Image (cartoon, rainbow, N blue to C red; front, side):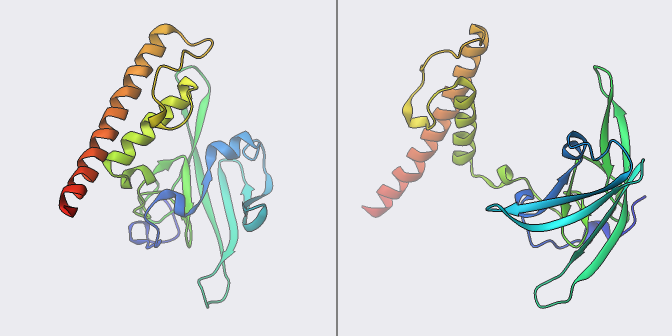
Length: 204
């Protein structure tokens, strides 16, 4: 299974998934690229300017990726290879489509492929999610802020809690999310206190 590259020895130079371009099979499906055979251009933009593109050729049960890449100071190198698709049934009916990682020796079923020399899965590039690199304080703060967003409270854990229940939210859900929010706020503030309290002592 698979074809190009040497699956587990890629060196992307990136530590997290958000540092490489990616292609999400769910996005391809929403855009209709998986609906029928044909050639489509997928592009990436930065500040409104196109910075990269790839041809995705739908051949039914498989896609062909066709593009060029180059390293700094090197010539452009063409790449063209097959990415197989597979489907699994959903619990509520229908099917979900997945990529098969095209890296040699892999073939893992994934939703997202990341682009280096070739597009391959996260494990082939040894990538971590950005959240995995957070320290406990930042992780607790981020999780509290996400809950604030769901609760429709002003952003920022120092703005306090109890801003009221969003319209349409059940009280049981509101109380559960509020308790989770307060738990993460307490963890975050305790971490800050420990870190900066120790720093203040060290400076005395």
